[in-house]
Figure 1 (cartoon, rainbow, N blue to C red):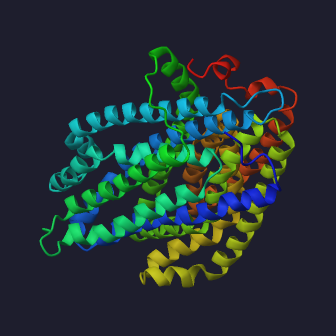
Figure 2: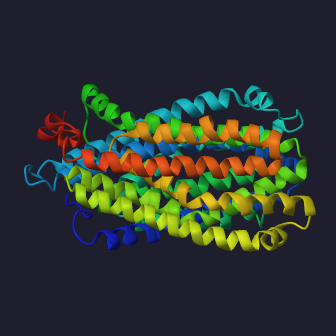
Length: 470
């Protein structure tokens, strides 16, 4: 396979990769908002029941994203290594096929285990999370369907990461858009019923999610097989498969841990906000959703920088890696500054667009005035983490997440709450983002210089490249 990202202007390559991902990230947000909107029409209990599923869905989604990160990192570096003058590219496609196939099989195995565990622990798990007895049947209606459809969530996510690793972000974005469109179309039909279709309520919401994800499974696997020829239909020995799985999990497992830290920190901060009343919590939730929209561009860039860094690192194009990361950092600072000004000056007005309660608006205004000051630094953290994972060095990304959320944000939020109330909690988020963003800049500068001194760190395995069946 020929690398697509090791030639041409760095800025144009990053722009070509990132623009489609902006729409892809927006589609993911639209998917979630549509589910929330339609279920809210059913009633408070149904919305509360689905809200209780969010932590579990987030955790399992973090597992899927970790596996996807490992897949993208390994495959991108293998493709990039084919561009090295010291190597032949003859073994590239068989090796990429093998890694892609092994990653899909690994995700299928893991999702089967997690689904079996989930199905057998629905009531005790959600009761331990605080769900009232009257909500448990509704939660069971939703999760009994959702768990069975987990394969449609995890496998396409891993498949899309393999497509992005080849330098194609347009198709994964179109696949994510397909999922959102199908979900928005099918949701009301199955939830409320239409014509011969019965009204299924919360079961309909879960079924619509499964159907939309199934469409992405078909699209992702079809593109991988018929267009990219990245799936291998041949028997693979257990030793060879385990060797591939180890290389994938060496990045994937730390990435899973990195993704799991955020919901833990948010849960703690939500408990702090609860001391100031339901309006404060609602304002925090509203501002958090607006934050996701404000960070679309940095999130899209962080999803795109991985394939670029992986291919160029594998090809030993260290100068291109350094330029790409530095450009990305400066873009994040510029974007963060613009968003901070817009949100800071219009925070109160924006809050009243979504809620007329003065307490909710006041909480959201404090958040949107303070936290966006650090969005530039937060974008640097996202980008640096993605770049480190692409290098096959996931521990720095894990360290940044641990430092930002558990070592800084959680204790500073508690201290700030005691000293300054709600403003202290949100100020802690701003401070922790800023400190770790600054550290990420210097940390990544150090690693970009190490590439030329230790090029052997890039190799997937000389033995494996010589014989892709191993």
